[in-house]
Length: 76
Image 1: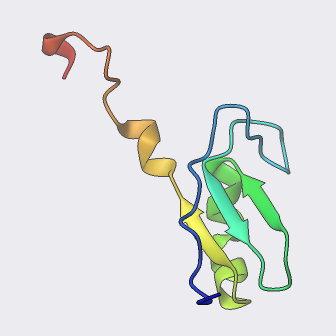
Image 2: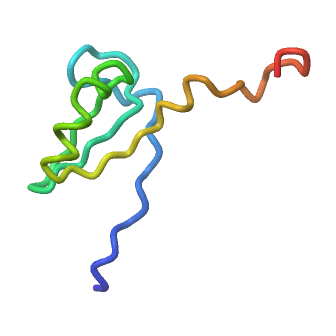
């Protein structure tokens, strides 16, 4: 075993915020094991403290402002 971390798996629409149940866009993997999932709102509230405590943060909240692949050309 090399000790390299596996790439983070993308968050799915079925992944839900541990605080409110909304779709999760942020995953915090804790240094002691386990993970927390947050919507963008709650992620912004807690991300700085979690990062300071050594959590690995996967932030996919930029997907909220991305143009959907099914958008018409005049919507892009």
